[in-house]
Image (cartoon, rainbow over all chains, first blue to last red; front, side, top):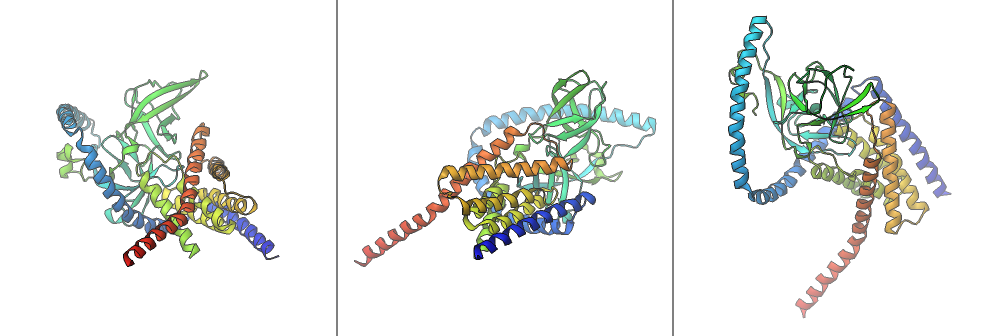
Amino acid sequence: MARADAGRRARSLLVAVVLGHVLLISAQVATPAGPSLLRTTVVAVVTEVQEASWLVAGAIHAVWNGYAALRGVREENARLARENIDLRVQLQQARANAAGADEMRALLDMRPHLPWKTTGAEVVAGSLSPDFRAITIDKGLADGVARDMPVINSDGVLGRVAQPVRDTSTVQLLIDRSAAAAVRTERARAEGIALGNGDGTLRLEYLSATADVAEGDSVVTAGIDGIYPPGLGVGRVERIERAGRAFRQVVIRPYADFSRLESVLVLVAPAPVGSPLLAAPEAKVGR
Amino acid sequence: MTALRMAGLVLAAVLIQGALFRSGSGAPGDLVLVAVVAVGLLHGRLAGLLTGTAAGLLQDALGGGMLGLSGLGKCVAGYLAGVAGTQFIVTQWMSRGFLFLGASLLNSVCFMGLSMLLGLRRFGNPILEVLTQAVVNAGVGVLLFSAIEFMPTAREQWNAVLERRRKRRYH
C-alpha cells in the first residue's frame, strides 16, 4: 500500500516537473531574456567552483604540457622565427594598404574604421554538455565584459558573450547549432549568414542565388548583425554541395581551432578617436 | 546524507565535464547524464527525477541555452532509470549498458525534438553523433558502476591489510 502511494507520488511529481519545464521554456519563448535571475545566480555560483577546480586541473595540465612541450621546442622555435619574419613583411604590406584605404576614406569623407579595445581572458571550462558549444572565460561584468560582445583569438572569430556574471562569462561559440553571424566572402563580397553546424563547421545561408562563391574563398564578418564588427576572419569555404539547380549548401571551415582554446580576446569597445591604439596598429590585439 | 552525495556526484560530473573538455570542440559523451542515470538506478525514480531536473537546469544555465531544454530530457531519463532499477534486475554490465544507451537516446530525442519544435537549432544528420554519444555514455556508465561496486571490496581489502600490519607490529 505504502509502495503504491510512493509510486503514485513519484508519478505526480514527474508530471509536475515536466509541466514546470514546459512552462519555463514557454516563458523564455515569450520573452527571449528568460528568467535571468535564476540563470545569473546558478552561473555565478558554479563558475566560482569551476575556477577553483580549474586551478587544480590547470596545474596538472601545466606540468604535463611543460614536459611534453620540451620535445621539439628547438624545431618549433626555428619555425616560429621564420613565421615571424613572414608576418612582419605581411604587416608592412597591410600598413601600406591601410594607409591607402585611409586616404581614400578621407577623400570620400567617410567615417574611419575604429580599432577595438580588447581584454584578454583565459578559458576556465569547456562545454558542459555535448549539445552546447560554449566555453567559460575568467572575465565578467567586473572587467567591463557585457552580453553580445564578440570574442576572438589570433586566428579569427570565436563567438559572442552569452551570459556575463561578475567575474566570469559564458561564451557561445560560433560553431554552436544556435549561433549565427552575418558574413561576406572577401573575394566577391557575397553576403550571407553563417550558422553553426554543431560538428565544428559552419554553413553559409541566405546567400543570393547569383552570388559568386568558390571553394577556398575567405569569409569575414560583414558587420551588419550588430554584434561582430566588419572584417574579422571567420573561415574559408571548404566545399559547396549542390542539390538541384537552384539549391547549394556552402560549408565553411572556421579559421579558429576550437579544440585548442586557452586564451581569448573580448572586444570590449571601440577605442576613442585619437587614442594611441589608432596610431599603433600592432597594439590593437593585446591584453 | 544521500541527497548531499547525489548533489556531490552531479556537481563532480559537471566540473569533470567542463575540465576534461575545456576547449570548445565538444565532448563525445555526457557525464552529467551518466551521473543522473546512475543516481536513478541506485536510489530510485524520485531521486533520478530530482537529480535529472537539477543537473539539466545547471547545464542549461552554464551552457547559455534556454533553461529547461536539457532539464526535460534528463528528468525523464532519471525517472525511467529509477523505474527500470526497481522493476527489472539490472546487475549485469550488458543490461546496464543498454539502460545507459536507452537513456542517452531518450535524452537526445527530447533535446533535439524541443530544439527543432522551437526553431532554435537545426540538425542536419545527427544519427552518427547521437549514436556515438549513446555508446560513449553507455561505456562510461558501465565503468562508473564497476567502480562503485569495486569501492566496498577495495575498502574491505585495505582495512584487512591495515589490520594485518597492526597485528604484525603488535607481535
